[in-house]
Length: 383
Ligand SMILES: Cc1cc2nc3c(=O)[nH]c(=O)nc-3n(C[C@H](O)[C@H](O)[C@H](O)COP(=O)(O)OP(=O)(O)OC[C@H]3O[C@@H](n4cnc5c(N)ncnc54)[C@H](O)[C@@H]3O)c2cc1C
Image (cartoon, rainbow, N blue to C red; front, side):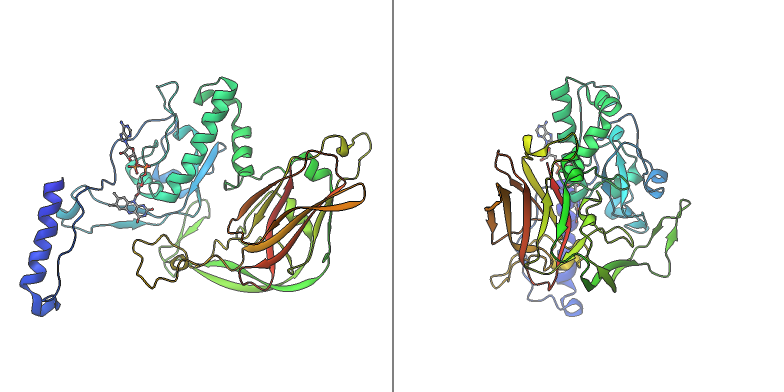
């Protein structure tokens, strides 16, 4: 493979130089050639389910979804460079489509999980699932499943049969996204009273909406996909209601914003008043989990992983919507104590450990964003 690829690369270089007048390549210099052949497709394992093109087109609505993909099915022919036809044929795929747990453990090796491009998928389904971020979220699912399997002394298949709900909820709790699966906020979060300083305030807010090209593909299930789908920002009126912070969906999905808006300096508080028959102060929550908005809809050129860094490179900016400065306080015996004061946050998902003592309330104050005039949060959970 290496020799073949080198002969192709040097052949193209030879062609460019021999036609220097035509391509303006007289002063071009060959600096570097990669010597490690990158292979797109090699061995895959067979799981209890093999994902097919039809699964992708149906959006993968699997009950045991543990990850998602969203890239189109860009099919490369086996002939590669020597294929006389198109080098790539793009088959649109709905975005996102769900990946089932049954495709990431082995059908016949009892203790084998896999993650990445080696999962149980056909050639066409793989052409969508193989991209790096998808491989990464499958890795998170495989690692979490392995932890459950080890703790409960189960095989990977038994985890799927006996503990799929726990696996999905653990992943959602760790800020993974699973299409159509809703995170269940913890009991202490649901029991607490949520109080926001700006409740009822009105703002005009922006929300991203997918705009499909004229050649949009509509699949049997009504899902849509297009090769050049773009994003349009629409503005709408919003009335502040902090209940969105515990609705269990931590990103904007289609027309549903699922977030909570406020101004820097506003506060959101969970009051742990004892309910009849229950006394939260006896078992204080251990941590506060916050999901800020890292603007997943921004144009990919603004935040993609760079492959070269010029000397005057300004660096990849942090999403303007992300909260940069915030404070977390705890009230005990009527007194507020600051337990976290963060001034340079760059994370979407932040976990703040709480003191191991009885408390009456926990308060978050977002103080500044990385540029956006309003603060947008997706979730606030006590655990
Ligand atoms: C040319 C090319 C271009 C691509 N372009 C893009 C792109 O633009 N965007 C995108 O998102 N994706 C792209 N992809 C796809 C993506 O990069 C791969 O599918 C993905 O990185 C695969 O990740 P992985 O962890 O499954 O496998 P790998 O990255 O292949 O990792 C497997 C690792 O296992 C190691 N290993 C193998 N055997 C053993 C062993 N016995 N013991 C220990 N270690 C072992 C290997 O050395 C390797 O490091 C591209 C792929 C190729 C080949």
